[in-house]
Length: 218
Image (cartoon, rainbow, N blue to C red):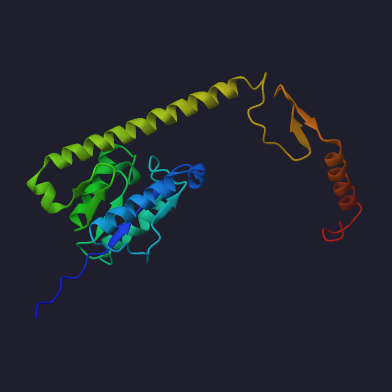
């Protein structure tokens, strides 16, 4: 009797850099695409690892030091994720938006460890065999990595310029509406206006504390 070949472990990695995307369509879309790929290929997604990075940037690389992807790569390096396993992502930019050499090093490290990398947006499947047989896959991946980094770099520069412009206009308009609870920003955004009832409550707290009252008593 012929033994069945063990089914490879399949992992879905989901990431979005903005916390606002958690309530939007990004999470749902990435989950559904991964589940659909698994169904079409007769795979069961491994749920022992929660491979989701919410609000973590792939441009700064924080998802590698504080996120789920970093933990996954550590398990791969420790050979606790077996060779032949499959890592499913929506697009290569979910893995990295760092500079090309850094992104490429991460990409090839995953492949060299014997992990198949699947990108759902373009239907690409990367592993040692596919790249050795068709090296243009590597060229395509580098183009994607370069484009992802350039997009994030351009966005970062735009945001820096916006905030620099705001800081330069501080003598005319306040930088942000965030302020202590006892003041609020005026409609023309030029000054903070005290909120009388809250200011009085805060003053009362300070007076009671100066009179020797404790926190619980106050």
